[in-house]
Length: 256
Image 1 (cartoon, rainbow, N blue to C red):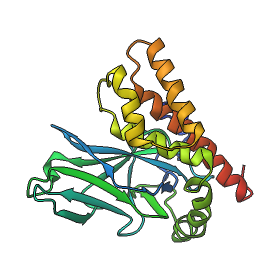
Image 2 (image 1 turned 45 degrees about the vertical axis):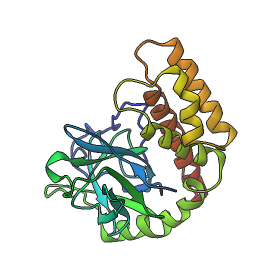
Image 3 (image 1 turned 30 degrees about the vertical axis):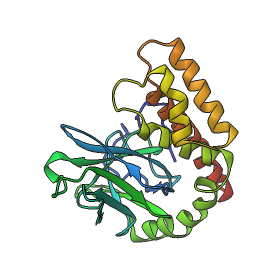
Image 4 (image 1 turned 180 degrees about the horizontal axis):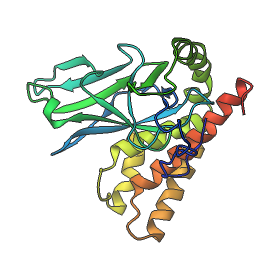
């Protein structure tokens, strides 16, 4: 597990000969308690999903590395129609998965050309328990993932990660709240000062104290900076928490 710095998206040592094209680590995808709404613009629809490292010894993904669900049914696209019907579709093959902040977040994007027919009024993603993502394989990969690696990472290691990354611990809960807030905020710009508490009550509610302190700290940082939106601050907080949560997970397995 190679840690990237906050928002760096840089993989350490990726410049070494023979390593640049090697498969990056398998990622765990944090299950969603409720569907994550996608936001749409003229380029398509997107949502940010919280992730973590499942292979300590593999390199972290570069920014925008392509991933796909390890097994069918782990990520579902939900299309709500004008008449209230909800159509459920396998996300793999429709929704692109791209790494964002090292191993801590993945952007799910539904490109404009793959938009769901029937003019849905909203789109959302549902991540099942114990979901994992595999890097999209490359033909010239000098060190591709083996079947054994995939079986271990997506099986017993993903199961072991559930208690740390998706349990009731304050850091795990804080990271989940941070990501829910991120996806409720606009992709560009920011919300008005008077809307912040409403956002918290609507999205976070009775979240743990750590999450509230994180939210208040971000508000303070945003108010003291120019051009620093609340969404970006919360993305950074999620990244920091997911790095700590991933390290705790690897310590439970006897890693670093």
